[in-house]
Image 1 (tube, rainbow, N blue to C red):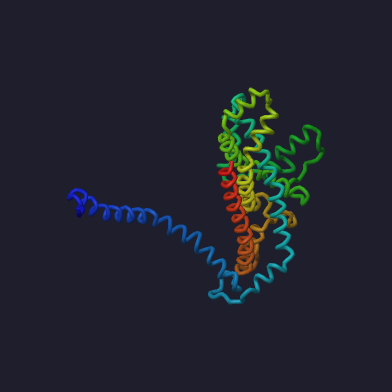
Image 2: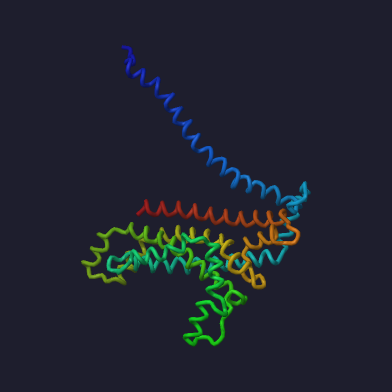
Length: 316
């Protein structure tokens, strides 16, 4: 017995392929501007950084002189590079736990239906996120001004200090002040992560625990925190990656000073590439490549953590 396609089905099969091809063409047509812009402003600069890192070039000469791995050797032998790298790690080690734990507590409070004006507080905490970082840095220079800044005025009015404290002009306070502003600036986005994570905890679990006589501390310790452990890993890694990208805030607040006490690795790269009397784009590119490799390691850790979290949730 032989099977034959009906005329209607055969006609439909014949028109499906041109329609699919036309859809694919439209997709690529709409993606073309994005692909071109991404290639021009992301892919090309990354490839160029690798190429320039092998050359001695100041950005003005017509040709770049190939010197191989000499820039990498010089960068790795520079104590200022390792100082900047250490400051970057210090920034990360202090800012990330402070940001993650503070926003977790705020999220637990703002997730409670009994919290008055919780929507207002959520909006207020998220407003700094949508504010341009460079503007925040410039404004904070006036906020922490030792003569007329509101912070020092408040400290003098309360009698905590007799003279203004130059928070951004002293090596002992500049980095910690910048970290505090960073945590305030980006706390809103981490708060959103935690609020989304709290929505995954079933209300039935809380109700069953309350019927057994569990109070608020017991609910937090035995239900909320254990169920949030997978999200803690992801949020922490996202916060770590974000804390490595503080160039605009540090540059506008302190410029890397005083005495290089806030010169994180991004500002170090900027100083060699653009701020010096004679720019050294090859040297700066080598430092940028090394820093990029470190960020890639953080991204790989994030990927592994996400996969481990998925396995844990499936197993549970």
